Image 1: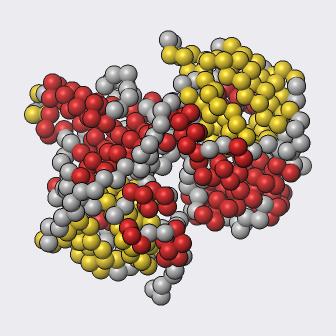
Image 2 (image 1 turned 30 degrees about the horizontal axis):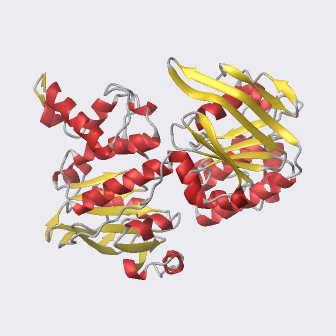
Image 3 (image 1 turned 180 degrees about the vertical axis):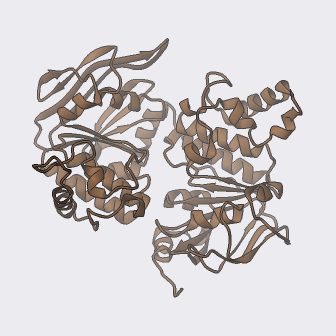
Length: 499
C-alpha cells in the first residue's frame, strides 16, 4: 500500500421511496489497500457497491478516481474506469471454457473476424499461472467445483486491467486451500497497486487479509479502524448496535434416545458405507472440506438423491425413503444451503413461502383458511423476530438472515422430529447468525434432533454436542464435545481412506 488515493466516495446518499438506505456515506480506498466493508445484511453495503458499479444512481454524492470526479452512469462506465465487482452468486456460462468466460463480451478476433480462441486461452493461462492456480484455461466451467468456479470469477474480473476490485463474500464457496489461493492473489494484486474492497461476514479472515475495516449500520458508517488496532467484540458491537454477549447459544439440556440411525449407506458415485446416529435433543455436527460429500449424504437421507445400499432407521424402525415427501411424512426435513435456489420461491411473498409445506392445513378444495395461514405467519414472525414489511413482501427482497428464518418457519410448521441444516449461516451477518444459533439451541432444548452440516469450524465447535468428520465420501472420525479442537477435526478432514 503506497498511500496514494485511488477512490473517494463522498456524501453518498440513496433512498427507495421513503426508505433511506444510504445516508451521507464517505468511503476512501488507496492504491494497494485492502479495505473490509463490514455490516449486517441491510446495512447498505450492497447498495453502496451497486452505486460504485453503475447499477444504481446515487441521489446525492460524488465519486472520485485518482482525484478526478467521475459519473458512473452504468456498469460499462464502471468497467471503463477499472472497477470490477465480483458478486457472491456465480454468473459464468457453464457450457463454455474458462478462457471463453474470462473474455466474454470482449473476445479477441483474428484478421478474418473469427474469434481467436487460441489467443484467449494463452492470455487466460498466463493469468492463471501468474497466480499459481492449478487450472487449464481450456477446461469447461461445468466440470469445475463451485470453489474453482469462484476463482474463475476472480480471474475474469482481474484480467481486464482492474484497478478497483470489490469482492463480495469471496470465500463462501471456497475450501481452505482455495481460500489460501485467494489470499495469495490478493497479495499479488496489492503489489500491482490494485485497491480491494473486501466484503465478508467471516471476521477471522478479515483480520488476516485487510489493512483497514469500515463498519456500516443502518446506511451510515459507524466505524473506520486500522485492522491491526481492531477488536472483534468491538466490531460486532458496532455492526449490531448492541453487545452479543452470547454469540453462540448452547444451553444445557437433556439428550435422549436415538432418533435417526443410518447403517451402511452408499451412493453409486459420491459416498460409501456411511453409518452414524443422531439423538433427540442433540446438535450433531458434520464437518468436512470441499468434496467431502456431506451435502450429497444428507440429500440421500432426505430422498432427494437415490441410494445404492444401506438402511435408515427412525425410532429404531426401518423406513423406506425414496422421495422427499417420504422423509417429510416421517418427520425428517432438510434445509438446503442453497436457500435462494432450493429453499424459497423468491418471486413469491413471505406468506406463500411459509405455508408452502403445510398447504393441506390451510386449503380444503377451493376454500383457503386465510385467518389460520396468517396466524401461522404472525406467530413465526414474533417467535423468530423475522423482519419484513408485510406478509405480502417478496421473499427475494429479504436479507439472508431473514430468508433463512422464513425457510426454518416453513419446515417447522410440520413439527419435525429431525432437522438437517446444511450450512445454516452461510452468507448471514453476525447479528442474524447469533439469532439463528439461538433458534437452533431452542429447537434442541425442545427435544428435536438437529444435524448441522457446516464448513465453519467455530460453528461446529461452539454449537455441537458431537461431530462426525468426512473426507472424500467416507466418515473418518467421530468426536464428542470434550474432544473438540481445530487440529483434531482438520486431521480427520484430510484423512483419506481406502475406497
